[in-house]
Image (cartoon, rainbow, N blue to C red; front, side):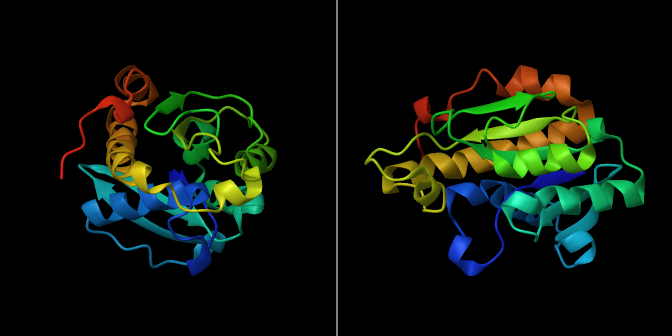
Length: 194
């Protein structure tokens, strides 16, 4: 299962905190799938990646209760936590940087904390996508619920695309392969093509 964290509703679309949803949206489009099911308090779809079944899921519980949706789906399908990849924003990583981890704490992210609490473990892999820190002394809550700065948008398009590749690699080859491939990249340093 690949889970993108975010908040549901048009006012949250394209905000920093919704980067997980954006990754799932792009991945579903690339796979020719649509998130039409509303089971497990989520938008979700089961689709095929090569010959492997994969559940794409975006909780509709709002960020702080994301774990409810993840747990309901995991229980229904009997998924081990090691087979659940969670995609979320990370304030402590700069824009253009991603980090794939095998497990760990919530790092102050309430959505991740909710998943940990509902699964009863922190032993699940994650794709942490850097959103950087506020430049203009914005309050953190306002910053994460705002769109990216204009000079970051083209970088984030690349990041979202690479994050989808990371998800695909996770399904096909496992978390170690993803960590080896993704953790050394900084897309902010790559030339942006029109």
